[in-house]
Length: 309
Ligand code: SF4
Ligand code: SF4
Image 1 (spheres, rainbow, N blue to C red):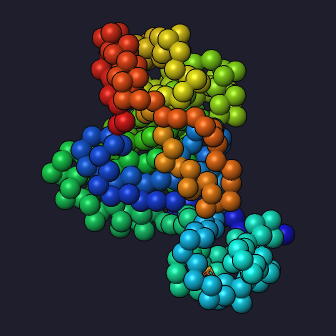
Image 2 (cartoon, rainbow, N blue to C red):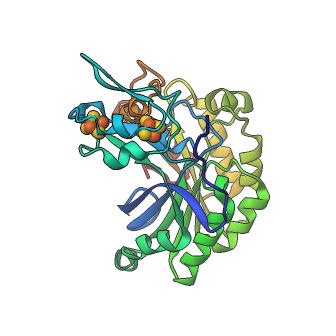
């Protein structure tokens, strides 16, 4: 069955969200551009809509009013009606044409992801330019994984710099050094995820070893500001041994601070809307007290530590 995939053009990117007034993705008030597509499969990911690079269908069963317009338009008969359960969608049959999204009057079917040009993204970014100037903010390119669309991200960062905007990259570092290296001239800040210091554990939690991202982190020149971001996952990377290794890496690379991103369950509903299973069932977020204990441990190293930003 033919699925609809974006064509790889350097002036076009697959974007799943452009978020204005963001205060957790770098200094000041920022506009964050979320790139769709990621080579990692982190078990705790709270943005499951970022995983695939192509636009896809999200289903919100509670909004359906039963008008059957989607049933009539679906070209591959992926939609059916059950007498009690109402509208059903066979995702294996669905070819992601998204025609049902256009006719649904209740937003019960929505699309996540859009192929956009650099000019289109810049037009959205520049609506917020006044806020950047007043707050010391700017633009953050996040994901998904921005390095997965290197040529597009490069053009976007160049356009931001032509406009004199502060730029930040939020990355797992999982991409080739040649891609990351090209972006460096157009970046003021890199927020670099360190998910686990042990290669095997990293692979267990994300599907890939940490050898490539840590090698990339070590190659970033010292004159570029780096923040280490540690997604803190219960029972996975919260051991004292792992935290101490993160401290050592932060010192070694000259990164400015460690930012803790405690595990949350914000993505659970989105997994269901995408027809996927909720990961980590039964695992609860850390208490505030526990997070403060982690922060205190890291701060004893003398490094600045923030939580959630
Ligand atoms: S996106 Fe909607 S209309 Fe298109 S094949 Fe899938 S269910 Fe049918
Ligand atoms: S078009 Fe939307 S509201 Fe109408 S039956 Fe389909 S999903 Fe439900």
